[in-house]
Image 1 (cartoon, rainbow, N blue to C red):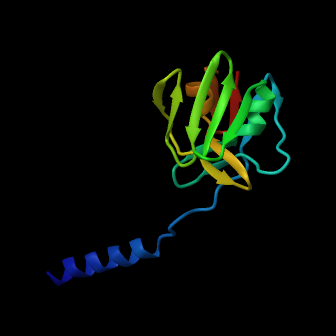
Image 2: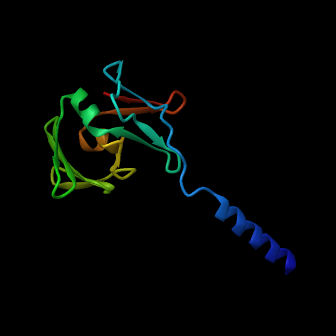
Image 3: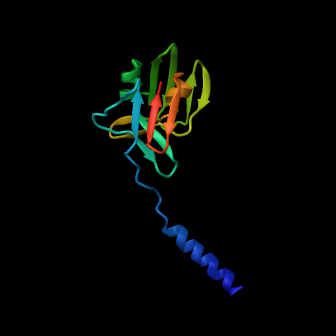
Length: 142
């Protein structure tokens, strides 16, 4: 019984010592039409806890020729292009595409005054194909 109690105490100590969050990795690259995008301020990143890639919505949308508007009263981005209109609320894990809800693999969040969206926003929401190369940390949108 003492051995079991000691094991439980050790596990509790280890769990409480684990960091609540991990620093994001900024060594992520994004490629469109065989050109690597540059980011003037907020860089794309990998959330190391959830292993999700996040991209600055406006920068990538501009490179794709997609219009982005911000509805401040509802904290919602309205994205129009590629014959679609997509709405994504800050903090939401879902988007509205052609009136239907789609779930993404992460939530929209703000970093460096930019709305960051999970990389799959562009495939599930805007209808582009996407490829993720884990070894080189490269997101390719085509």
